[in-house]
Image (tube, rainbow, N blue to C red; front, side, top):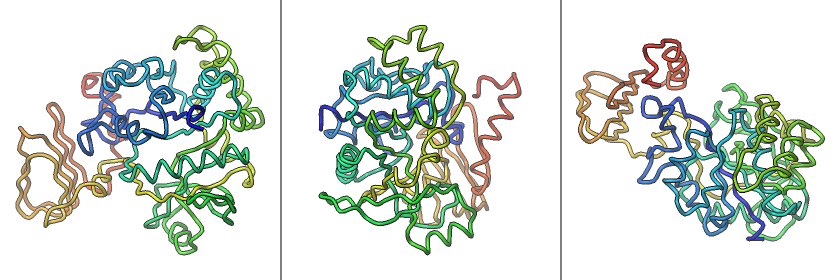
Length: 367
């Protein structure tokens, strides 16, 4: 299956919740938030050797194509593709499907793994094993497979999948019948789901064959089917020709979840249970899952000294000292030209702050 196994990394977002480090010109996936590699480099590296460099595609913002090509010269530069317009993950997937149909010469059984660029997974070997088992299952059943993460706590920030009976099949990965996707729950519902034990977090990692996702497009999102068809017939040597631009411009902004996944009958979707660690790096509070705190439960990156500082996240660099006195549950992030200070529970509101900054023309340089 190796020659017909493709990975598509979705890397078009800006990661606004990581402002002020993440900027329009330097998005989250190009930051070294955890470790010595950027998030996009980590994502690509952990796929090897399951997916070859020639079969690894990155779909990103047009402004990030050249920085990513410089960062990852081992990839075919034509496999790092800039979307002509930002249209959420639905058109992004259709773009990838069209390209892979062209690359695989119309092979409907070519396997695609769609995954985000901003997740932390340290047990790469186990992840590859799950992806390989999921890919084989996608070919054998013609169904769409998603990776389900066993919940560690009653999260209200993730979508869930209800899981049914396990399939009888070879391989170490447990693959279950889906019983439907669930929206992000409130705290009471999340606690009930966790206690019930049959729910998994939706990882946002999907595995399908080209044929199965095209069939799903034709039934539930014909505009995405039209886009994928146009790209397959017109895409050559990495060029975004006028046909592609025209078709892309017709698409509404819609996620793959709303466009297709939530419209599929439950029996059309399978859930491969993860055997690997997983963390969705969504905001500054995510650092708590990846960086060991000090004796006062502070997560610190860079230079910091404090008096009576507890349960806080402080990020700076090796040349700027951050200090604080008598604070608790705070986030402080310092960069060369901007500083963020907020209470930890308000980390998700950084996007609101960015919108406020964007509304002030005098602050454009800080976006």
